[in-house]
Length: 249
Image 1 (spheres, one colour):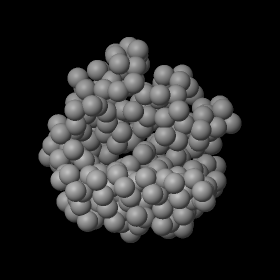
Image 2 (cartoon, helix red, strand yellow; image 1 turned 60 degrees about the vertical axis):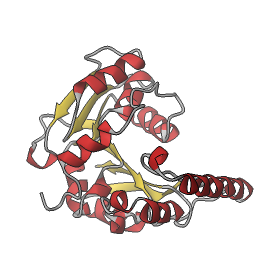
Image 3 (cartoon, one colour; image 1 turned 60 degrees about the horizontal axis):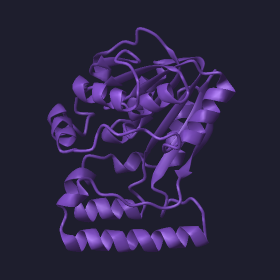
Image 4 (cartoon, one colour; image 1 turned 30 degrees about the vertical axis):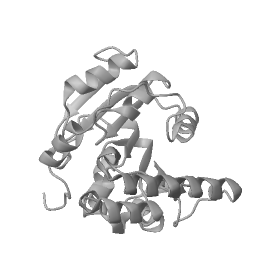
């Protein structure tokens, strides 16, 4: 497991530190337009979210796009996921849950849509973790991967004010060109590999930071938002995310 930048203890502590997990997922959830387009265009019926505990995207896909959805993660605390389902007016069995180590699991079925949002950057071997996504994908299916862009200003905030969290991420993989090359090498047709979003900043457990750090972050966020409204563009320097969409032949 040397490929892994985090361990189970990290994720237990991470989720135990959260106090607002069971939220109502809105219809305009992040990446909703991209996912809605894929589902409609490709007539998607089944999907699996990898590394997605507590299951925000699984809930979104079930609640609004009516897909047959599976959630797979190394760490799943089912009471949290069940509370999330209840908060979103979903039944206990509306999402199939698999708690397993992705590196020791052979898919029992393949899916029309395989997605992860904030997973691959926690591994050193980017090609390997992407190929583990692809093994879940049906012929003709769509791969959808997003990750943070810590080469942007947001990354400087992470490195400066939350170095421990920053070090849990593979910064080298945060490169759309690199990701496009890896996915194409695996035999998929890449439809898009790009920076996503105008500007955003965040810090994990921000409430625990000093008042000075929180004030500085708020001021920077405000200036960046104004700037991105005046000159809206997506770039390595400012965009908070990277997005990859590809299709299996």
